[in-house]
Length: 380
Image 1 (cartoon, rainbow, N blue to C red):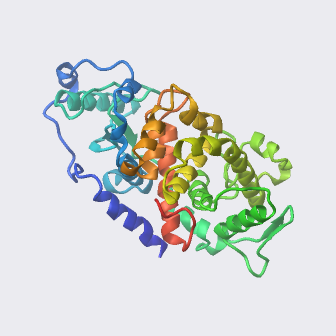
Image 2: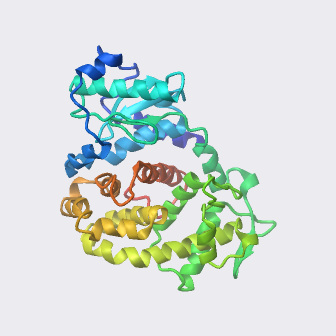
């Protein structure tokens, strides 16, 4: 069953973007001629964001999900890893191109193509990119060797029998030697135990978001260890594990990781919920719950203060206020993504935050398609 999930997602994605074509788009302008013919570039890529109206975010989550699905699954226009794809402020696919012989050559090709698209009026503005600095139109590399979503899903659901386990942590027993459980079952058990004990008050919808987070962050690998020193299935930092009072010898313990993640989410929940209710409390229940789960995830990833500020800070809350007034025109994903997108370049928000939200949404959809009655799937 699982192998059909990503095939179905891909079929859907290939029908989302009407501008997509299976043939590489060629432009009459190339090389330095494109740059000469193009209008003067803007000085910074986030200048494009500042000139973009909020309504542009309608459908953006689905569009960007399509592009990220191509990247993460190495399919669609990313069937070859030696390519980049370019897209605009609506996350509409524009063109793909073959990489150059090295990073510098690829950057030149990207900038020339950006200039050509601006010269032809396909986009209203362009910004040359350079090492460590994004350009516009935005570009994504198709080379994502660590993306193994299908394998991660099999680990998470327990379809891979080698990943089933049993154990105990701080009064919680999960499975037995004769009856091992999946990682998904373990997350559910720990959540319900802590909810019943009154240690957390998180809405059940957080379970689908946790599933997506695990699939993207660690792929369900118990001993995952990132270059930033994040550890375990929940990719927790030593500081976070210390805050949860977990002894070092248990840093990679799966149940301890789940318990700590829920504790941190609960802390974020207490800080985020009041601002969320003030801004989005009038939304229909299903949409509000789905949106809140996404913002809670973003707070876990980038800091609750940063996400709370998107609804409370006078310089940052414009997008949230607009979406709250016109929520019927946007999905929960559009709103969560739009709040980040329209503040890119502010408050330390970068494109990584935008991609993270969408990647976890893709993984969450896959989990929802594979697991019956997983809470939080209704508005995805």
